[in-house]
Length: 147
Image 1: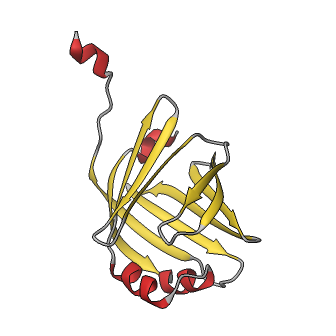
Image 2 (image 1 turned 90 degrees about the horizontal axis):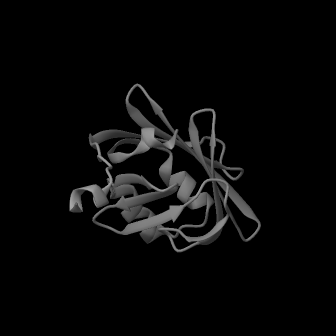
Image 3 (image 1 turned 90 degrees about the vertical axis):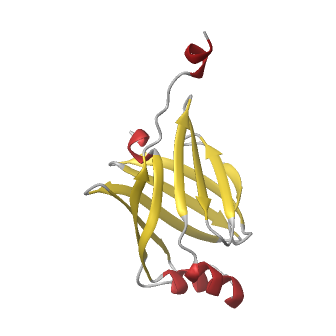
């Protein structure tokens, strides 16, 4: 159930992010800013469409998608990818492909924290990031509020 991800999450820990960014081709200046950023992730779900917004002082990006449907994504580092999200064993799995390369990002909730593991075959140690929930987004039917 992707509803478990709904809310605003704040980055609290990140390991190996610089090596990952190097492996996927992110330049030095962008990596420096990316390493300093402490983004919030905001997840919402409306009518089967999942929205994920990454907000930081460096950049804000947002994507909306349905599970198991490929779409074109422009990433925060301006890669143009073909992206698919699936939900497997309680994990929200994102697969990005571009220029013959592939990266996988797995998001899961463990002990009330959002844990992200990301890897590509160009690095030996995956990225591990931890986010803590800062705000739960309550979703309700706005039409009933207008009556």
